[in-house]
Image (cartoon, rainbow, N blue to C red; front, side):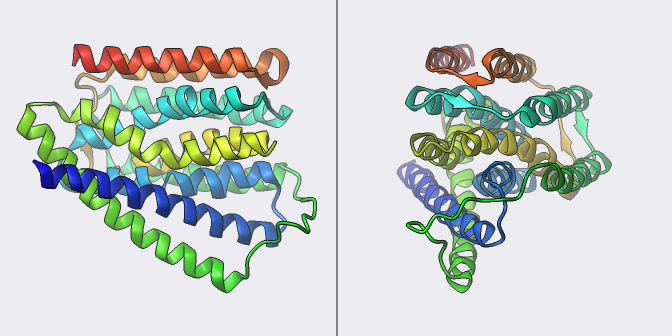
Length: 309
């Protein structure tokens, strides 16, 4: 038991630090390529900080732990919206671009609904996984084309050398791979020992743990006034979780029994996505009081999940 706890703690540390350094290296390269902050948030930062979810879900799929594979994605998306953006908005009111409201939020809602519909059928097949990943690639190309690509020059915070950024990215991926491996192993062993279902472990411990990179990067972005990047990070991560994390996991091995016990969680994910869209649409901002509402909803969700099992 104690060894499993050490595995979980060690996995969290490696995932958090690996995600942090991965983003640092990737953003540095993106800045040298003159990519806009919103695109950085939607792609490099959003996908980079979601790498833990990808690796954890793939490992869980290989181990036959479909509850952790799906619970991790659903729980992470719920955490992304309610915990991460809620916290970021408390630090600073987050503004949003028109393109985000017209393109990114509708797309996020659409793929969330499609994911739930397919998952409720009982199996996410290899074909569905491949289609999802392909859709993500098309979406990334489209995003890069529609968003402006100019970045203001920041003389005080120049990006690091390309060779240094590449080394950091490689080492970060190594930390993420090993961290996800020991995290899933520790979580699964404790779940079996205590009689806790994979669903609860995936929706709470694993989901929150793998969402910490998004939390730290979004709060940091909000505090520095880069609210576009904070929102882009969450939207990009949510899209990545559904289309890439589930897509690749299902492409490797079909995910079965995905409707078992997840109905409430699916409804919560869809509901929070719609609520976020509504909040952002009112004044094109996510205000502090709205962030508090999201945080309170997240606390209520976690509490009910743990209590009701």
